[in-house]
Image 1 (cartoon, rainbow, N blue to C red):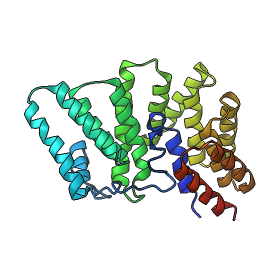
Image 2 (image 1 turned 135 degrees about the vertical axis):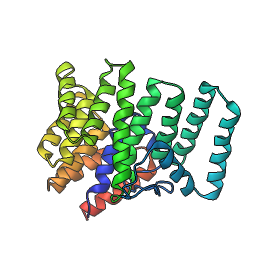
Image 3 (image 1 turned 90 degrees about the horizontal axis):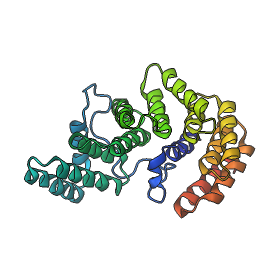
Image 4 (image 1 turned 30 degrees about the horizontal axis):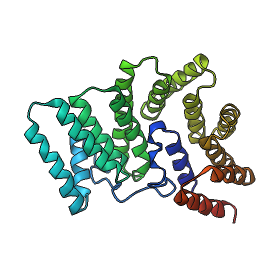
Length: 283
């Protein structure tokens, strides 16, 4: 059994504003109906926002494609009215969100920021890009690299107008780790945040997740346990402990923490998927 599904669930819990995915599609079963990206699976063709979005639109079913294009066509009538045009692109971003497609949402919100510079839109687009990576086919490294780079760039733009926002800085630093050939720069930023605010939730969460991804399971366990001490009942910490213990070979502890997480979940679909996962690791 691959540990990838549970790690995906952990990643989705750690992205902050994108917690909306609960009740719509669980990361235990990634790949909703619009997650297939036809753009450039390792074709070597440079990607940009417009080309990736065009591929996403082409991959829609005919009814949804018609709905999208009808709204997009309204941009022509707006002429030189950037604020109104940005509003249309934000509406189109919501179109993708209702279809559980974070990449489509990120692309349209990205287009909106070209017309209206807003820190919250840069932030959300950056988080959507970062989360979208985990729904891509593993072989689609070209689009994954595009998303990681865009995530870092969008979050950096958001940070320009809010340089003292530690949550935003933590998200940017995490994106930097994911996209940079020198990831320690992002790690150092996360550590600096913790020196400034020792119990900072996002910085510790990102470092714990990165520890799991790099196989440093004892470090991940220590950070998640600290988070539970500081923030009792934090669902992502229980889930992260389940992931870390499982991947470190301690199934009994993994089951304990996943069961505790299961008790916090309200969404029936997610409850069922956690139950299925528990049955797989503890038949």
